[in-house]
Length: 169
Length: 169
Ligand SMILES: [Zn+2]
Ligand SMILES: [Zn+2]
Image (cartoon, rainbow over all chains, first blue to last red):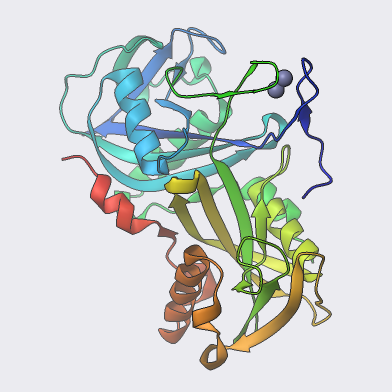
C-alpha cells in the first residue's frame, strides 16, 4: 500500500495521500416515474443525472445519498436499498446508488440543477444522460420493475463486467 | 458540498480535499474454515483481522480486495460476491468485504501480518479480533453458512443499524 504514487504538494513538497472517492446518490421514484436533474455545472452541464455527489467525511453512505438528493433536487425521500455499486477506475471513483421513494412532490432545482423532473420510462432522455453509471443504474432498476421485482429484491449491480474480468483463477 | 471543512496544508496553506476512504478486503474461506491474519502493524497490532486495506487510485473494489489479500496473506483467491458494506463514519471510512475461496493452501504472512491461519468456526478468536467490521462480517457470513445459504445468496450487510436510524420519514 505504501508503494503507490502520492500527491506531492507543488508548493511545499509535502506528501498528501490521494484515494478513490465515493459518489453516493439516489434513484428517486414516484409511482412509475423516476426523478432526474439537469446539471447546472460541469462536467456535463445540461445533461440529465440522478442526484448524487461526493461523500463527505464523518457521514454514512445512506446519509450522503439523502443529503445530495436534498441539495440537488430539494427532494425528501424514503431511502430504499442499495441498487448499484459501480467502479469507475479511470477517474478513481466508486458510484453507489440507492433506490429512494419520494416523500412528497415538492422537489425543485438546487444550485447544481437547471431543472428537476419526473420521467415516465418512455420519456427518459437516454441520449442526454450525463454519466454511464447513471444510465446503467437506471436500466438495471427499470429492468427489475419490468419483471415485477420488488424494490427490496432488486439484485445489487456490482460492476459485474469488470468484476468477472478480474477474478483470478 | 463546497461548504465542508477542508484540509489546509500547514506548510503552504494550500487547500487539499479530504474524503472518506474505502477499505476493501476479503473473507477467504476453505471448506469450513476462514482465513485470518494477525496484524504486525498498528492499529491493533497482534489482533486478528481479515485481509483488507485502503483502496488505491485507478483500481476497482474487487481488485483492491484481491490485491490486499495477496499482500497480507500471500493468498490467491477466487473472488465471490460482496457480503458487507459497513460505514465507519467516525473515522471517515467505508469497509467492503467480498467472500473469496482460497485457490490453494500456500498462504503465508505478508509484511503486515505476524501470522496467517485458517480457523474453524469453533476456534475463531472472537476476543482478539482487530475491528468491529471484521467481527460483524464474520458473524454475518457464518450465520448464512449455518442456515445453509449459498455464498452467492448471502444477503449483503449494508450497515443496517445506522441505515435504519437515518431513513427520514
Ligand atoms: Zn500541501
Ligand atoms: Zn504545501
